[in-house]
Length: 326
Image 1 (tube, helix red, strand yellow):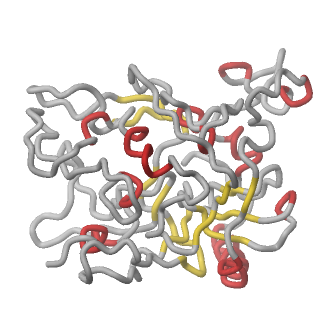
Image 2 (tube, helix red, strand yellow):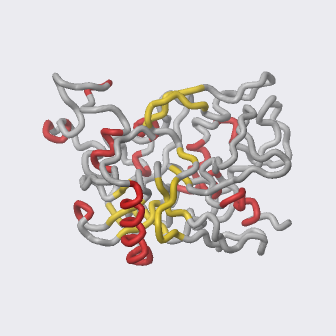
């Protein structure tokens, strides 16, 4: 992630460790939906607009004060106080301006650091399925090994596009924070856009917003949001507005696609079942998937990925063992 760090990495990790160890078990960080400037239907308020836009001195597209993700990080970054969610370090705070002194691990991980106890999951190779398993929260932040891009660089959106008999991994798009989130607010869950920018989707997916927003977690395997009845029921459909060919209702049917032919089912709608969010986090993961004697794990187009975690919640693809015993 191309951001400027204003403080020493080691010092920051130590500070995060102290803060998180002291308060991670204090509960989730709650907040109202469409917070701060992201208020649906609020109407144009000049001072609010000026927080992000510059009429005559903009240096970025859409008259933004600065490009994404730097603009987003002025509120959601490591040293910011405008929002209680630090998406860089994967930490959520309580109290206005992060003054509450209590921190928790963000449900979506972080773009540079995360607190996912990916190597200490309980419930692997146990009962099938195991919705009650646990992926704990770390006491100190760890470097991420994979993230969704947010810096406008062009990345391959794996599985984007229609079923095809020709080899096609997916198109490249310049992914930004605003590709998935509506900065002006829309009343949807996490202000997610019904159709992410540049996805090419023809129809959008609406996810009803939470009655109470809780950004943090104490268990990374417990992915259902009990405050948002439609979250887990709709999230795989939403992810598939970009990753079109990943959505499947069967693990055995051949789709006819040259690349995405036999696909694990992803459309189940309950905690602990087969859906996108059960296996993957949204922002960034610190899990690892090391090379093996058989050649290790590669990306879809054959590029070796010795430590790539593909946003998975558990090391070495341990998410499989949460449902499937050997």
